[in-house]
Each structure stands twice: as C-alpha cells, then as structure tokens.
Amino acid sequence: TAGEDSTTGNTLLGYLSGGTIDVNTINNTFVGHKSGSGTKSDAQNNTAIGVSSLSSLTSGDNNIAIGVDSGKSITGTSSAVLIGKQAGESINNATALGTVAVGHQSLKDLTSGAGNTAVGYTSADSVTIGANNTVLGYGAFATATDTSKCVIIGRNAGDSINSSDSDGTVLIGFDSGQSITSGQYTTAVGYESLTSLTNGDKNTAVGYQAGNTTEGATKSTFIGYDTEGSVP
Image (cartoon, rainbow, N blue to C red; front, side):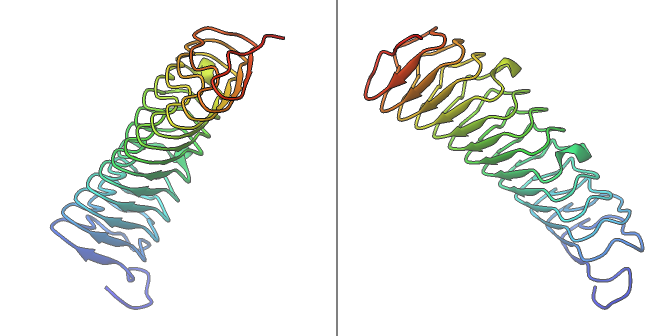
C-alpha cells in the first residue's frame, strides 16, 4: 500500500504475509510465506523477510528480521535486529528490547534476556534469560542459559559455560576458556588461553595458550606464552 494515511506505508508479499493490520499499523514490510502474519495493533516500522519471520508480531516496533523463522515468537518486543535462520526465534518478552542476533540460530533460545548481542553461527544459541552479553564467534557461548554480563569473542570461546555463577566472564581468543562451566570472575585473552579451566574463580590469563593446562586454579595469574601461572 502507499500514501500518507494511517493504514498506508505497508508492503506485503507472500501468502498470509502481514496477517491482520489495524488502522495504526504503518510503515511495515513483510516478505515471505506467513511473514508478519499475526494480528497487529499499532505495530510500526518493522521489516521481516523470510518464511514465518516475525509471524507472531502484534505491537512491536522497529524490528528487523531476515531469515526463516527469525523472530517468529516476537509479539511486543521492539528494536531487535535478527539476521539468519531461526535467529532470535524464541524471543517473547518486551524486556528483550534491542537484541542483536546475526548468524544461523544465533540467540535461538532467547526469551526475555535484555541487552544481548551475538554474532556468529549458533552463537549464544542456548541463552534464555541471560542479559547484557556480547558474543562474537562461531559456536561461542554455546551452552550458557542464564549467564549475564559476559564478553565472549572467538570460535568456541566459553562454549561450556552453563551457570549464572560465571557472570562477568571475559574470554577473547580461539577456544579461550572453552571448558569453563561455572568459574566466576575470570578473564582470559589469547589463543587457547585457559582452555582446560573448569570452575576455578578469579583467574587472569593473557597470552598464547596462557594457563591452558590448568583445570581448577583460583586467584591465579598467567601472563605470556604457555605460562603455568602464579598465585598471590
């Protein structure tokens, strides 16, 4: 449709795309089978491209969903950017405002966690209520569900974390901290740094394979290539 009146500005292409549109649902683009097929009430400025993308949308605004089933459970959440098949497909609460998920099944299980950004194939795909995480990398942060305030960068980095006890973990590098399950206050920077650590607390590792053979250290510092660390 086109024009300046309240029911205009919507572009629909595909079987059942757009669903039911009320008088104040404007400036939306729905392309694909069942894209945006829910019953709208004041939904504005949304873009959905792909089969069943934003298919449950009712009142959310300013969302972008590109990919099959991307954002398919969103009703009133706003300002999400979801790109990739099933990216953010379980989001169903307005608290997930501003979620960014880029990659196949990225943040696939997220329901209500706020302030999450995940980029990469299946990155953070098990997070449900965890909040304020930044994840970048193929398969990174793969098993975390309710962990929050983490920065995880690198392929498979932090992919065993599965407890909120690991809130605030910072892991940067290929396979960095990949065995950590519930260790807290850990920072590891470097290729395969702290790869064997499981649940040690308050550790810091910087360097190529720094502390990579340590399994349960606490309050240890590892600096340099393949270092074994020191305890204060």
